[in-house]
Length: 45
Image (cartoon, rainbow, N blue to C red; front, top):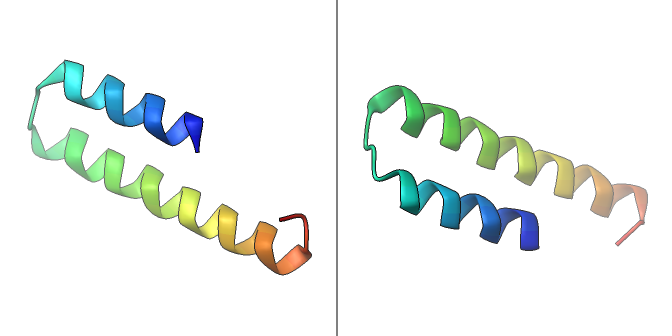
C-alpha cells in the first residue's frame, strides 16, 4: 500500500496530465490490481 501511496504522491508532484502518462498510470494500477488478486488467490495475504 505504501508503494501505491508513493506513486500517487509522485504523480501529483509531476502535474502533467498528458494522455500517455495517464494511460501508463492506468496500466500500472491495473497491473497492481492483477498482482494483488493473484497474491490473494495464492493465499499470501
